[in-house]
Length: 180
Ligand SMILES: [Zn+2]
Image (cartoon, rainbow, N blue to C red; front, side, top):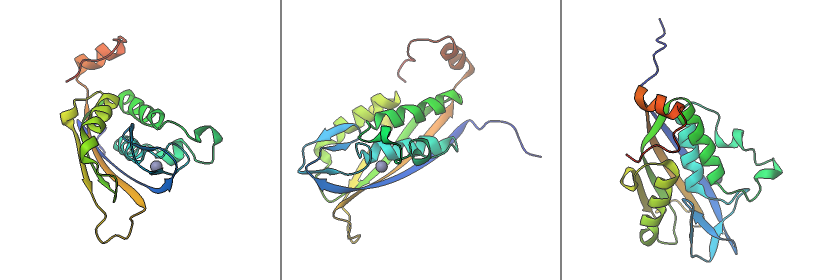
């Protein structure tokens, strides 16, 4: 017999890739990085936020980012990817879950992510309402992949069922829940 019990924790996984193009801003994790090329795409090309969005949606077994925000729709052209992430997070919270932590790997030849890692982790943490020490961010160069003009992102997320107390507080429309 199938159990109707909702799991206490769920995981989600997301992947994204975009091609570098000259003359556009490079945005990763909601942070603009100084570089001579940016990532092309229908929206702002922020592959890390796209992969996080897909991981959040995946944790709920929801339709993916392409299904929710089709590139064929003109209104998403040049869109700030924060909009996608917020919608995915809303779905997670609506189902009664909160984000516990995420881990991510970026694969790109340039620029170096190290100098920007703290800024990216802080911004992602802020967007997900978690502490920056719950945002893993690793960067690798594409050794042997022949993808020097492409950036890729892999993300996993863990979400946990909100406690009853927290759930009723959220239902009471508390302005914002405290940072854990
Ligand atoms: Zn994307």
